[in-house]
Length: 122
Length: 235
Image (cartoon, rainbow over the protein chains, first blue to last red):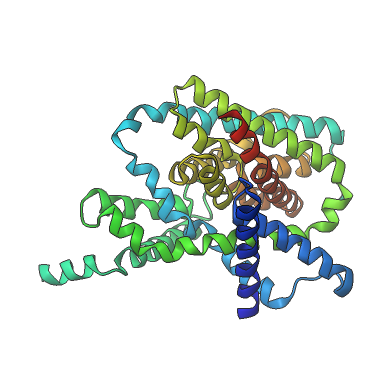
């Protein structure tokens, strides 16, 4: 498990250092995610398509509790400074109609591209 | 007795303990309800935390300090998202053209609509920049919001509620429009309603769930890599 955690922190660290060095506005952990993906692809060429057990274990555990990790930040939306009093309308517009329109547009495009529904597994 | 309560509430572990307990309770209620989509553990766990801070039992600053430990895990957890994406590499390769087109289109549409509706609703610049990454999974959205000058707090709240809105009304809306292909339903839910939408797609069928995870992972990667450059050229 330690080896898995070490891999994750190492990729995050390398990602953060890289984007800071290059001056890219991309978040460091996302660069780290891309880096890990590439490393897994390269490893796959040698060791076959599999994920090392310690990495599998740690990443599964972390992803399962993702929403717990951002809860402390998420509650910040309930404690906005005074200047944000009128900002509930734009937030509500973005969250409800914004999401549903985007979902429907995406689904309709995909439906048109894939043609009629496939009953069996593609 | 009140001195004991005072000591307990001011202990540096109080906020962390409260969060862990509230989340565990939220998870239990969610499971007992048969995984009702409106009873997301995240939303349920927010209630006691917000009430205690609002009630003045715990200051927001003390709470933030106490939960730093959880915040530090967000980075490694974001990196970990590469693992499920890698596991789906076969499906990504098989459906590459369709995935590339749909995910670019879905991410572009969701982000443009967020910009348009926030502007129409009179959003201030901080709120506008915070809601732009709303179509990606929360840890990525928070980091993108921070990178482009928004507030991670607003991003986290907006993204969580976006997921619930999409997962609740999305399947109903697609039923109305005659969209039944599990691949289409899954991918649309994963792209626009990320983690909550993906969980919902897994409830519909394993195939819908697999396509939703693809949509979730690839949309996050695309938006995180492109939006900061677009946003920095707009401001």
